[in-house]
Length: 424
Image (cartoon, rainbow, N blue to C red):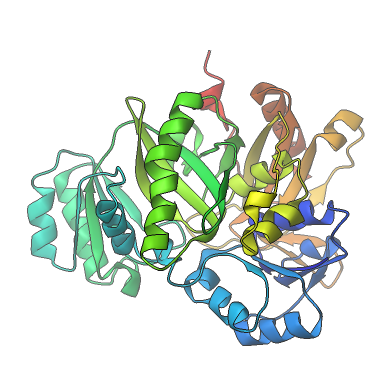
């Protein structure tokens, strides 16, 4: 099987690595890939959808897997399907679940899927009036894509009104914020639940937890994610059952009823309040860095999961996961998330310990290959050190052992990933 992976981050590296370990996969191309994906396959300097479809046709690509949200929202799946190409991901219409916060919230309301009380508006006066009815903290969201940064949790009403004003004026997020959602804050704990879907059938992956804040103890600004672990012990069979019955099934049924059957990865960002699940957001792709910890837990061939989902045949597949844990620690550049940093050479010590070699890996993200052949940190989130183990503690310890083997100027990371699961 020949596979094309669209994207350039750690998520796409993790997907490519899982496919590279699959004996059914003959060759992998990355479009555009990063400075390390060339160790797994071949990088293509192509971004335009029709040109990518031309490449897929002329090179006999059997499956295309789309990693990031932007090409999905912009319709890459529609372009490929019109040409009879197999591609894993939702259509542009289905991708509105992530592409528009307003569409998403109204979809939840239409299908009676539990979520926070909200309004959607392009009027500051309407937003301010609703804010006055809420208790702090208050959540303000930009409607469009903001690379995971378009959500403000305001500590008081004045801050919420300021956030609404800055979004609606275009100052904060440009066009993406000129229509907003204001909603009540739900007090509980967050879970990341992913389902791989083919429009009707679905496979729920082990629940993960992401760490959005920059600093230990969940302090500092929100980021794209500083680490993750899976599966989390903060979910049991009863909660899985509620999520399945109240969220996953109604979502797929609702999308089908509205003429946009959902195919691809459905991410459900959930808040658990007194044992009850509420939807905070949908994404229409794997989270990053959740993908980096979920992929090594997949026991079944990655190509089978993606191909069967992309061809409406998930019901034929038996998808299994290892009974293990994975913890991923993001290593970021010096100035992340405030501004870009100077390129810095990455040096990875040789790992002599066989146990660590066999139970850890690095998912490269913001990296490029220099003319000298060396790898350089050139992005905000540079890489993810992933550890595997028979317990969360063992996986966490291996992840941080690997962190200790990686060196570049200005590196930063949290030291408490998976702390929720390891509280004494």
